Length: 209
Image (cartoon, rainbow, N blue to C red; front, top):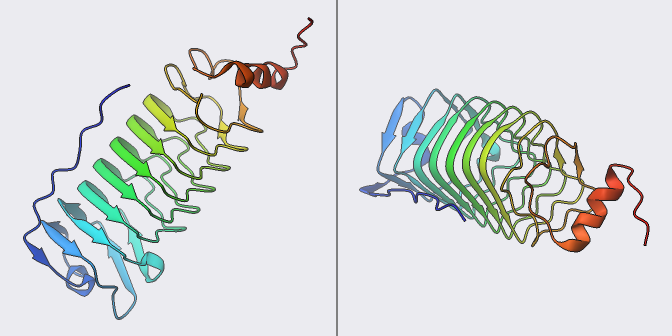
């Protein structure tokens, strides 16, 4: 298994979100208070920041970049990170339902014990991305450029992984019921024996005893 670089967190101050409304760069901050009013964060880089129990439902995000950040028990459902850069980022115990990372660049990213149903990573650029103990039903990885994509004990029911390289990806500990993929994408994919039978039937191949 490929080792994933951990975030380098150097927290210096705890600040409410309202103080980032007009900034373009925020370094070494801890956010554990929800904003008192709606915010629209645009073209902001968060570097070495911790987000703890933040509800992003009232926080609009456009062009946000994340470097050496950790999200703990946050709700980022339906937030958009299209085209953003994520470097050494952890989402732990988070709600990521419907989150969008279309055309994003994800490197050394970990998603742990989180709800990721309908997450869209299509056309993203992935290098070392780990999903662990997470609900990934119906996630989309279509047309993604992938290296070192990892899943551990995840629910991948009806996930779509078409026109993306799954070489070296191990799905043997995950549920892949109803997986949607194509023959080119699964070259080099690692699965269990019973999963192999399911993939064979997916491509219309009949196995005779």
